Image 1 (cartoon, rainbow, N blue to C red):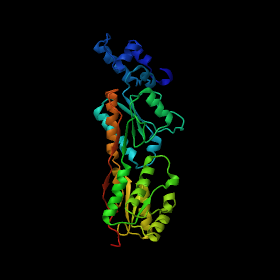
Image 2 (image 1 turned 60 degrees about the vertical axis):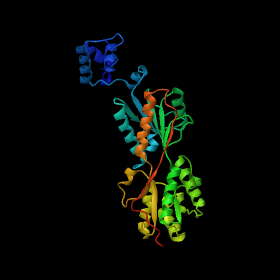
Image 3 (image 1 turned 120 degrees about the vertical axis):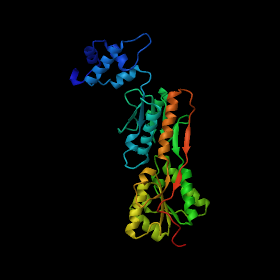
Image 4 (image 1 turned 90 degrees about the vertical axis):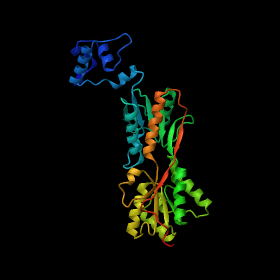
Length: 342
């Protein structure tokens, strides 16, 4: 037993059979003219368990047509922030895989990769799910090798597969709700054009806010907080100076900062200021007061992505490229009300 790590050869010696027999038994590759007596099969399995033998994943994948492994890319950038949508996405991916494709393993890459490197694992995989984005080298490798994949909440090649929330529609829903309540002085709290780089939601929410305000002949309201300064300075500027009665926040962490700042400044929410943010339903459950939010549908994103990937794996070459847009919805809680001057 080399370096204390049991090998295929150790199992073969202790079970009194050849290495190829052990390999076929443990990989369940009997048939096609190869068979073993039941007692031999049980003996091999017993020995493997007794000495805690684990197959070499990379070597095993080189000899198998299907590895029954799904790899999730982008964990480092997508899962690093607590309470973001991707934790719910991953949980629902694994639930669907466990229920539909029993025997499959799901791995998540949490490594940091340089922009010009490949994020693909050393072993073969049956499919990949990409959280938001991967490096160009990774996408080229996936496409070239014909590996089934789905991008979740991010861009994909024109003939690729993706599941994304409709941020443009969600922004319109939020602004329409503010207008129904009677708000006309509506501010936006999120990255300004100077800082827009990376994820499409940054541009989509900002630009849709501007276009909707213009369409309804309302004046856009921005403040210093949009350039990552303090939330208190932002509220002083847009509420106390510019008279905003409602804020659409890019994300729930920014919205929480605004609520804390409002409390410090004595600005009552929702009596004097209404707030809506984009959020994940499960992250919002632990917040107090409960934020009114645009639900990004992370649970459905994970389930739809997993189903789309498994469909590709189980029906190779038969699934046409899909770019699925999931509708966002408004969930009304405790941070919105008609403007205080009505």
